[in-house]
Image (cartoon, rainbow, N blue to C red; front, side, top):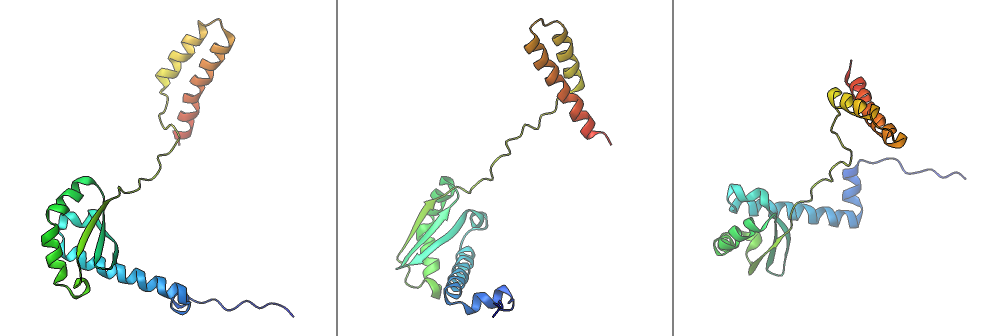
Length: 156
């Protein structure tokens, strides 16, 4: 008897049928809704710097991109709390906490993208001609050859 895999289903169907995935999706939708409500009460400049992390037991945890925005939001905390308490979703809001978490920057490429000019390559070759040490001379010539390879890559 051969194994017959189940027919493929769209991801949205899978998310709605599997209980753990459905709970996770519902939680994500709830947080997205609460984030929109929070943004409606924030100043436009602060919206990109403040994100809702959690909402439980009357405590709202907000993640802020840097200390500057955390300080600005702490000064406005009482006003923000009153405005959010007026919304049904935040009716039992008792306190707001701010945590500073800088955004994760993508890693910088490790490659050195500086190209060697033809003039620099000629200077290296001229210097290599006057060097008596064979290892140093070979190293300078290898370095000068990089300019030739770089110019060949850029030529049509």
